[in-house]
Image (tube, rainbow, N blue to C red; front, side, top):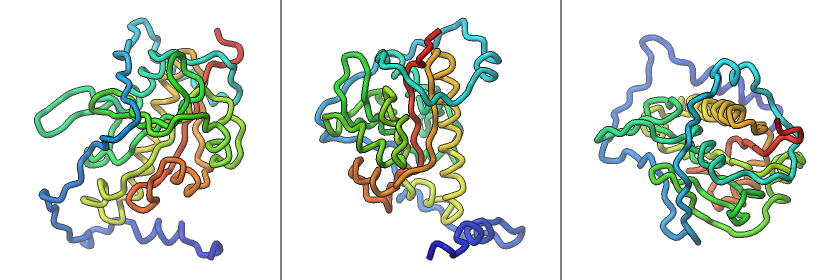
Amino acid sequence: SMSEKYGDNFQNKSKYERGNLPKHHLDWQRKPSSYKVYDNSIEVIQLPKPRLKKNIDFWKVIINRYSTRKFSSVPLEPSELSDLLYGMSGITRNFPQFQFRTVPSAGGLYPIEIYPIINNVETYNQGVYHYNIKDHSLELLKSGDFRREIMKACLDQKIAYNSAVNFTWTAILPRSKWKYLQRAYRYIYLDAGHIGQNLYLVAEALGLGACTIGAIYDEELNRLLDIDGEEETSIYVGVVGNRINKD
């Protein structure tokens, strides 16, 4: 029932106690892949290389960041979308067994996937896409205008209808559970938070508006993305677009 204190129960049950840590053997043969790739996507779009402007004042970006809830109808440029995706989860350094990214992740397990739902980006068709992190590309999963569906799934908030792109962040739970068992849920939400903050910071650096949304009808979003809600489930949304008074 909704009156059950499931949050309190989870917080207490997932606490680590000295001398009473979960006994758990890591099975490296069964470690889930860190990357999701759609072999059967409608189209693959290679994103432009991230530009990484040199003259950005870091502290100005930190201080000026705020949530924007009004967007103009000016489309995003592909290079801006590329910068946003790279800033949220791009690969920064390659090692034989491991890739560092622009965000930290518990155990380097990176359970979060990014699905951009494109409403208004120059030269890109509207539709539901998946961000292929390894190739820095977009995989088109469904063509069409999904603004109404994403708005409804975000508790009918109009910002999700008016934005240029809606990023749905999902968690692939086995990636984290492989190591952290039930405690994984704590880390998954922290990981998503790191990514959300990077969305805000890159958007601010580019002069774009952004806002994150935690209020979602989980299964409506899962249906839109064709994910099962068990192994992989939607947990967070970020919207971005040009501000109405673009500087």
